Length: 279
Picture 1: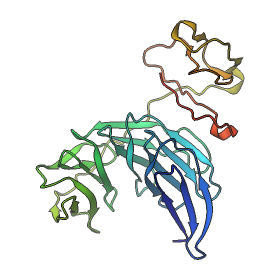
Picture 2: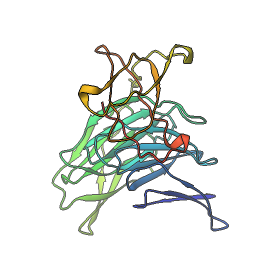
Picture 3: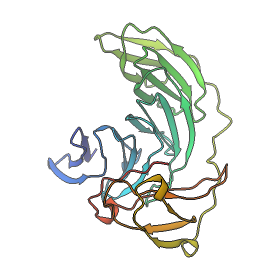
Picture 4: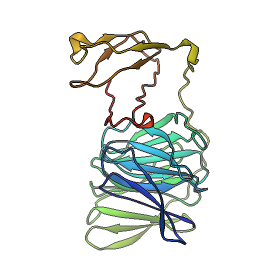
């Protein structure tokens, strides 16, 4: 109850001291409007969902960015932490729900994606997690409301043919019913089926950590801003360079089933670069 977070189309997140009414710090890093923000259950971390198709995690005490979850393929509108502090959930314009295992609680770490579910036929307008942490509700511009199990994201119920797009969701305190608010000003209370016990917890796909000593340090070689002149590298590698004219392109070999992490150290290195990675 001590800190208030605000965000908007200026791409900034502001943290405020509620009692003094003073701004504590500004969080910068999104390359699009910030549509949704959520505190972790203990208030130590803030999650943000942006128009740059990214979800970011921030330390609320220091303002340090802990991770950028860049797997979404469209604008992200809503983000939430599960009550048990085990997962981060987000959704938006790409019609999908994503579930990450929350690892970066106190320092920067990779938060592995453990579940993706194609949920609706149109953008997801809201999501909410039940107080007991067992279910997730989503609303969409396709005029449906759906209920999902947590953490498996298995479909439980569908409330189709809503009179208008549902823009707001809220569970009752006992998690047995769901309140919906629609764009036409109407609202109603939906009765839910009893939640079934969850027996399977999704696990992150295994990957091999690379020791720093095994990473080759390379310097970018120009020209490399076209596919035919892309710089050939062997991974793992750390490449230093400067963006001069258009994108910098690199090519490397990887095998089916391998998992690799690609990261740009721009904002953290105080660079003005508005960075983006495509594979």
